[in-house]
Amino acid sequence: MDENTPSNSLGAIISSLAARRFIYSTYVLALLVVGATQVALTSLSITNPDWLIATLAVLGYLGVPVAGLAVANTSKKATDAESQTDDEAAARQQPRPATA
Image 1 (cartoon, rainbow, N blue to C red):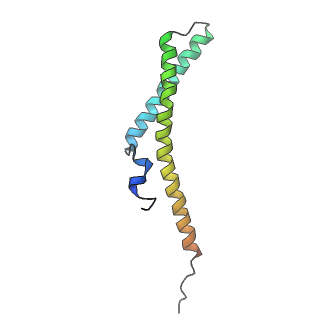
Image 2: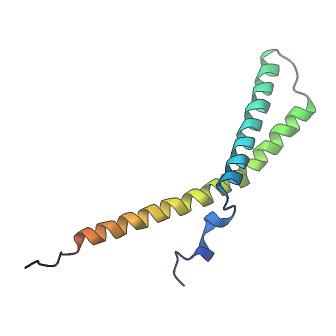
Image 3: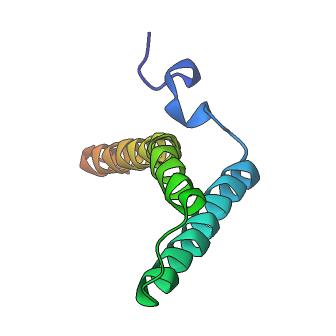
């Protein structure tokens, strides 16, 4: 089986670009809000509430699958780009037929 077949494509985990953008944007926004809340409370010497500590822990845990999704989709694009570059380089190395 060819390693470039779609069945081996990790980028097919969530194939919709809009869905991936929503996931990444929501995750980053949640991190910004919760992180800023913690920084604000800490700068005021207020003890972090339990809900904030739990939310930070959950967001940290969710970073693994979100990053895995990003890597899976980025790796496929990078591999495709590298193989295209290799194919183009090989085509340039081929001697051109002589014209009469």
